[in-house]
Length: 444
Image 1 (cartoon, helix red, strand yellow):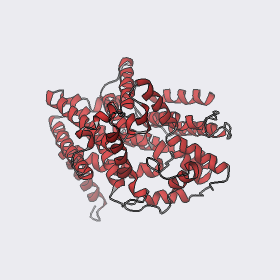
Image 2: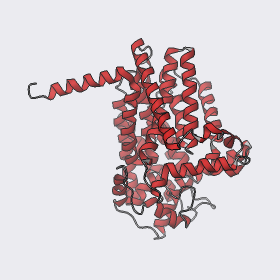
Image 3: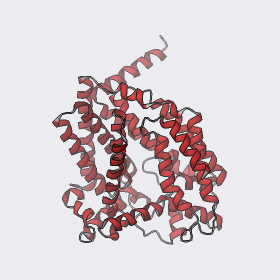
Image 4: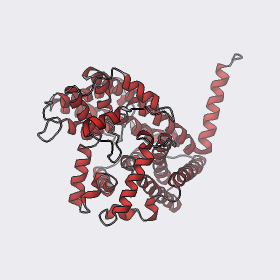
């Protein structure tokens, strides 16, 4: 309890009552919901015999991350500067953003048509499978099998077809598109900008939903809320309303996961949602701790870090991925929905070096969040606002992906933000590169 109180106090200091989403807020939220719960030693959990140590380790590790974030000045990037800087962009900046977003949405839509071999299933009747998965079981199954093929096919024996790159481009790209459309609407306030926002939102939902994506859909909603928070300081009522919208979205997309068999009532879906959170990536953390404790799994001693580094290279997949080994040891089969039991950063660090590596890894994570967030906060332009929104999401999601995922997704996000920035952003980047080239030339 003391750890929780200290964390909440430090988070209050980082927020400065500005009510803006910072990376550390998302990081802590994911840790508490997805990591802590499965590690609690309840009678029905896999941690029943492990005792309180794993949960205490997770709590202390998170505390170290928050302390490192505060000590390295992560709270020194107030949102008031953002709101003042991006309150009134010029007409040329707005036009450039509109061109860039149109180009980005067109690219993402074309990518989706290519991957699905036609219109995404959600646009051809798949939405009914979300509203009533029992009566539309065939469509719901198709979407989940599509997720299996498009997201992890190359890891479970299927041919590599650019899954990793395409997944990152689609998921990150739609988050940027939604955030950009929200920002453009907040500046333009025209009927055309409102319709544009609606079209982008529908396409993002249909395409990501057709791929069976759950977290990316929720992060699109988070991106929209974060974009609005950069423009306006939300009231308590607005924050509550945003939470209700997020809850409805989470319940709606449950059929994309195990909740497909849970029925259609709100109560059944809510129960399935709680079960999905507690039995998601965090449960794989618990299984890793248990398997190591009973001697079925050895500490990797850094080999897992190398494996994930190699997997960042397109087309390269380990012959026997760590997550597949965990699946076989913990669940006895690879024939699950994905057959690929991916842990969060906690499980990856624990498997690579044990408790000490977990503590050091979280402390470094908090420091990294602070340093990168301060750099992002220096940007002052419409494109900079997009970087702030997407940067806060990617940095916060470090809790799940680890440093490898942050690097890979960050590189993709940088390219897509450049596309969304439009001609003004391209011109600004070229001038910056030219000045740096002149400054480093021998003649200079």
